[in-house]
Image (cartoon, rainbow, N blue to C red; front, top):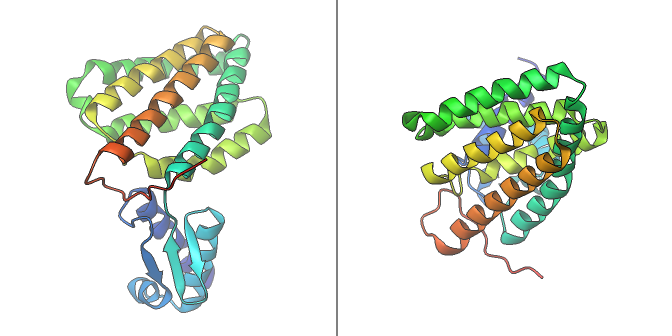
Length: 232
């Protein structure tokens, strides 16, 4: 296996482990240990670390390794401030375009059916994987159909940081609420109602942010450790 292929393998594996919480914020990654684990030389491991740093998922430590980037109260608030500004606008654009785009109508109409199935199936609500699959499809559809390509690009670049936060405050109750919030967004898009779509998106993101911050500030034993950093 060539250097690039091995670097891709290491990068993909570590990225997945950071996003699903197996590698915790602040955890050290040794070049030597990672190289041994993957049967790689140091160079592709360093290449993978550089790519992860560019994603904002690790911080490099000299030439010896890296550290998984921390999650702080400030970083959560900053991320959601950006998400509200950008995603509400993108959702508004998609709803505007839906008035004359049958593909948008069909895509979000299908999502309404699938989210409704999840909402009506108590067993499905208990299993987050199906819900996350649907939200991934929803998010990708917003990125695809938003009129402003630069807006879509920036939203796409934020997605790894969004994924890291999912496991902080997961609960069946929040999942059930989020299903209905996604239904509201989808229905506003199918109705070609830009203002309703933007408002539904903002409401969803505010509820998500509150859930995450409440979990961080008031709960113990979180799956992901978070730095309680004061913000101004």
